[in-house]
Image 1: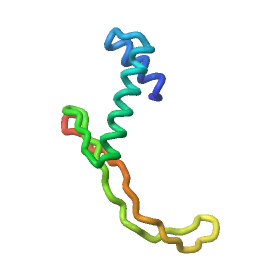
Image 2 (image 1 turned 60 degrees about the horizontal axis):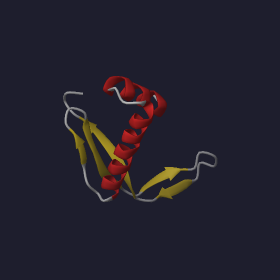
Image 3 (image 1 turned 45 degrees about the horizontal axis):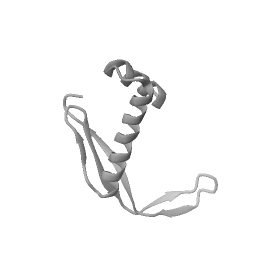
Image 4 (image 1 turned 135 degrees about the vertical axis):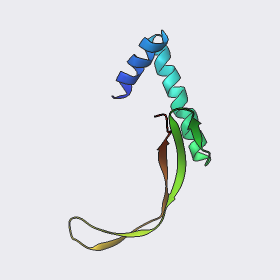
Length: 85
């Protein structure tokens, strides 16, 4: 399912127009992105949680040359599904 399919499904399920469903989805994505950037957890009861985690520095390999390279530490978003899902 891509974004257009999700908008169509949201519109059909809620009785909203596709334009309104797109606005609602875009608002949800913007609010979720802002919360995650602040380091907050976003929990949707019955669906799951989005959390920001740390991925430590590690060694990897350049696939072209086989040379060992250092991959920097970074923050990543993780999804943890709820038990109901």
